[in-house]
Length: 95
Image 1: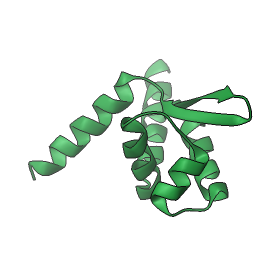
Image 2: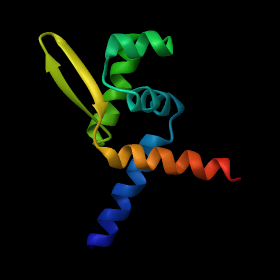
Image 3: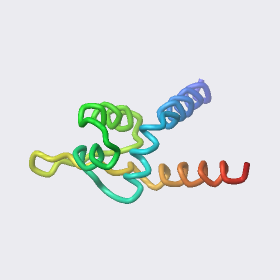
């Protein structure tokens, strides 16, 4: 039963990572911590659309947030996220 749970979690993670917009956000966050406004400006997206994608990423433990006053900053949750992204991009370069 534990293996089935793990398979479901892995599948959900890949679903979250499969969206091009979310990948673009993750690549920005790979460079460092940003708020919704900065992400929206760099990706030419509305703040509401960025916030929606960040919620999905946060719910999947891919990004984390911290509040400073009224501003919420986002960063990658841990080094595993960076490792997954790096390995995936390395893999596609070998095709």
